[in-house]
Image 1: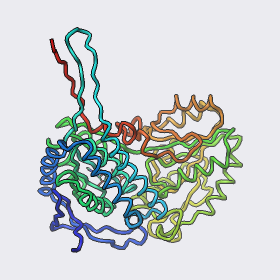
Image 2 (image 1 turned 180 degrees about the vertical axis):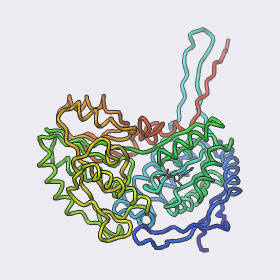
Image 3 (image 1 turned 60 degrees about the horizontal axis):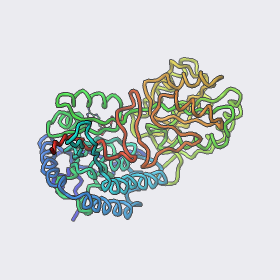
Image 4 (image 1 turned 90 degrees about the vertical axis):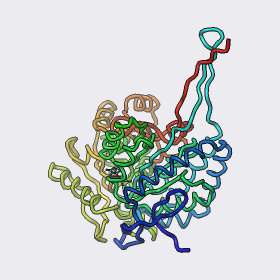
Length: 474
Ligand code: ADP
């Protein structure tokens, strides 16, 4: 039977009358068409989750865990095929897509294990003859809305923890990269997810977002994406007082102190900057280098930039295309704003000669705080370089943003390390490392970077309610 890429509702694939073209950002060619969900199907999917939740929440933790382990094995079995789909629809280099599949699968395995460890507390009462205790129940039907930059890992991080906790999930993946999520839908059925435990709707984000964030059957929204949409979902969710987790934008500082191992710092920086062409919320967005090592670090960096291979993600490039015309326009706008305000382009600065959605790796100096490249999330292969004199100065500059997701720094000095950890307003740190993501991170940020954490030992907590009871047994 030919696959239907449509809405997954109650264990069945539903084809509607409207379609969405999914195209490859490398060459703008259509990969496939998917059938989108209308308002009736979206509501049907919510109702199905309500039914799914009723039975799934009664499954034993062991049974939920076993089904998630099946799901994990199937994702690993289809690792290469899924990685190819990720590259085709997102443009990221294939070697990064393989890493994403393994990273994304690790959340499924971890959540399956954590399903067996949901625990409650019991206390001695301050008064005799009474016991005090808590119980944990799954929160109910969860709506998950995910972005295009990690088409697999952002889905599995949310869905596997919710399902492990005993919740049912309705997923709306990004309209730019829905195929990976739909493939996960097929695998979830093969793994033994009962009907209504994992539904998928696709299509018009505003309409679907409004329905999901206002429908009273949905008890929780978990979202990864832009701060703007996060704020809107928060506002809409207030009408039914939904529990909400938000993982939003970032503006990560990457700080090279004077005592840093410069070669290690450079390796870490290249990783933190250019993964997915700079299109991740934890990408190094501003590079701060101590004045005493700035010349040498910059010349080493220029050598590395010259060697970067820009091109087709399927053919071993280091940097693929940006995701969309809007993304390209934003990067062009940030660079021209910097130039207009006196910045100097040390490398790149233009659309790449390959055309399409490619932009050159770009290094910018003479950066001022008022520039967009300093203030905003660039989400592209551009590096604003800022020199600093003292620890206090770089901490203050790093914090001059509304975001607070990830920060990186290289130093051998333990006093500097503790001072940074205490004073940088960020949720996650790479200390002498440009790579921080594992299933063990409490992943999330401060300020306008979001609310709540995903993954970690507590990965099921956002999907559980705690009830309290006082038992008078006298
Ligand atoms: P980005 O700017 O990184 O694309 P978005 O916040 O626009 O981030 O997209 C992240 C997810 O949010 C995607 O699944 C997208 O379809 C969805 N989305 C976009 N606009 C809305 C909206 N108004 N309501 C709900 N979801 C939305």
